[in-house]
Amino acid sequence: MMRDLVYVPSTCKIEDIETPALIVDLDKLERNIDRMARFSAESGVNIRPHAKTHKCPIIAHKQIDKGAIGITCAKLSEAEVMASAGIKNILIANQVVQRTKINRLASLVRLADVMVAVEDPGNIEDLDAAARAKGVTIPVVIEVDVGMNRCGSRSVEETLLLARKIAASPNLELRGLMGYEGHAVFIKDIEERRARCAEANDLLVKHKEALEDAGFEVSIVSAAGTGTYDLAGRNPGITEIEPGSYIFMDTRYGGIEGINFEQSLFVLTTVISKKGPSEAILDAGKKAVTEEFGLPRVAGAPGWELTKLAEEHGFIKATQPACELRVGDKVRLIPSHCCTTVNLHDMYYCCRGEFVEAVWDIAARGCVR
Ligand SMILES: Cc1ncc(COP(=O)(O)O)c(C=O)c1O
Image (cartoon, rainbow, N blue to C red):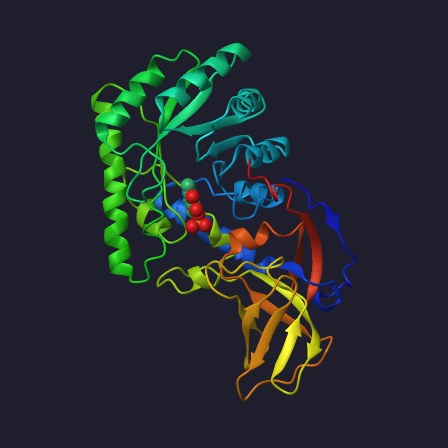
């Protein structure tokens, strides 16, 4: 169990925090982690939560304390931060390409069990050569494109060729397959989501069966995000799921039928200017909250809505009837995309009720390499 990094006096209240600030409601965060842990226990699927969402080793340790088998990372530098903080089992669900990065990966596997996704024969050769030079073995999973049109093998034949290439690489170890159905996770209608997800997961399992028929051992088949965790997690061919956003949620996932995790993250802002009864300016703009999935939602200030984000300012308008706001009042914004909003902040202010209980470093913030 990892200890919280910074404790603050128990008398510090949310309203005393300097804004803009990223706030986590600990009760809700803990219930979300527990809920996913219960799903794992009931369904028998392993959970390897995606740490790209929180980028915080303390949260990763909390997920592992509640039964997660390890974590997923999007980037090598994220995995380096997590391994340095004592996380022992990591899947980099992405390609690591470039000689210097591959050398870093070959060093990292001494510190933790770090698997990496592969999909290119030349990259497999580079990984094997770097592992040989360092005297280590790099575990790999073959990434399969299950319909998202991103990275990954696009046919069973290609997967078999990659597996043979890995088998012929003395310093690589084939662990299995990963295939993220990112094109299905945000489908609002639950029946359509179920159908698209099943198609993608079944395709991944078809690749697994082809590998097994050819004599390969496949111990890992990894899939799923928050929108599909329960669908993929109940597919008997999937061994582990890698959801990220469920711990925080956001307005985009909040609108997805059947995804019932609690909204535990918000950006606290302050009204710095008031223009008449129905216009106000907040101290948070695009540098404090992202908007690629739509404008954030105002919470706790009935009748007010955000109309625009500038670099350092947020513009809110009242639609009648609205509560009164004055300069200095606090306004909460619910992000439309939690993962990219987190990456704008250095720390979480972790609150229980109205009090700040701890401050956690977002240690992998900015780790995009
Ligand atoms: C490879 C991979 N796995 C899992 C996820 C799931 O993340 P989330 O639960 O935040 O949708 C993502 C999201 O982008 C991803 O890229």
